[in-house]
Image (cartoon, rainbow, N blue to C red; front, side):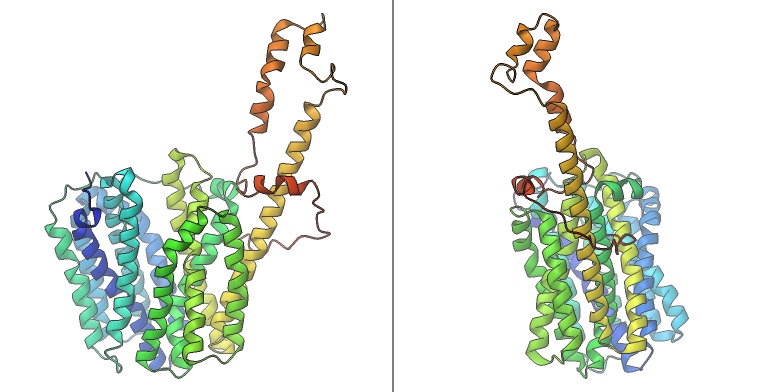
Length: 469
């Protein structure tokens, strides 16, 4: 049972999360800065981040098996030890091909650690406190990533010292969870994947998740190299990253409150539209100093809230017994998007310069916006056609007496049971409740306006059909 103060009840898990994210946040930035200082091609930096997310995808399957066989704490300890060893191996090994393999291993280990923590919190949190517990979990994660950036700012020349601290954090995160007095959670149950079914059911959400993954992977992997290419020092690069991550942290609560009042599909379209313009301006204009910090802060607010809003939007359109499968599908979709994002962005940066990072993100946001508009328009047309068919099916003759259900009672050719069915109108209610799969939540709010709606001559191209949330 969760205590009155859940942050105290799960303090060991939160401390473990903090140390783990300090290490992870600083390791990604360290590798990007280190390779940028060595003037390594951007494609290698993107490949390193892609391999990390590939490891996350592969680790989702392996983590279930390991945790089921040896338990949560042993699985976490083993994963943390392997990840710590991989972090230190960057000191001994300079071959980039080996670094790619190590990043895959780190991703697999981190996914196993995430699964231990989140499944533990999910199982032992009361429903009335679930939101509070996971809010603390997300805040702790963001603070850990910011702490990792600030730690790197103390080592402008990089060197071996940051890797030592990173390895120490990976090792020390074992201690709180190993000594916790909480009861161990039950073994994990496999989460089935229903990718095609969910793509038909919640296409807008999964599209947003996939594009959010591409943006996140490209930013975390290549933003340090982009900042270094603009002549920033190590301290300035870490400040640049910290401001962006802090913006994502500060935006979570207010954006969550807004999404409870404004249709989430509209928020996704708004974020995508503004991101398209904002990132295009960052790519084209020679921003520097506080102007660049303000721009990246706004980017963090919009980009880092895409995933939670899209995930909430997806969950509101599925039944309770499908949510475990949906969570697995959403994580896989995000991971795949994050695998491809850094590769594509780094190839553009290699060919056309560092500004192509934000040009790529702008293209992703534009693709998302067009896809959302297309799906929303299609759903609206399907809803209108269904309403017209239902109205035609249940339309009665004109006149006071003819339009009344009592007319059936006065007709001797009509059976009494038919009269009762018409009076109750059960068939119409059942038919009206059938809406298209993935029906957008704001269509009903615009139903009256639809009577005067004139469809455009042409609809946007379905440019994002192969993307996922």
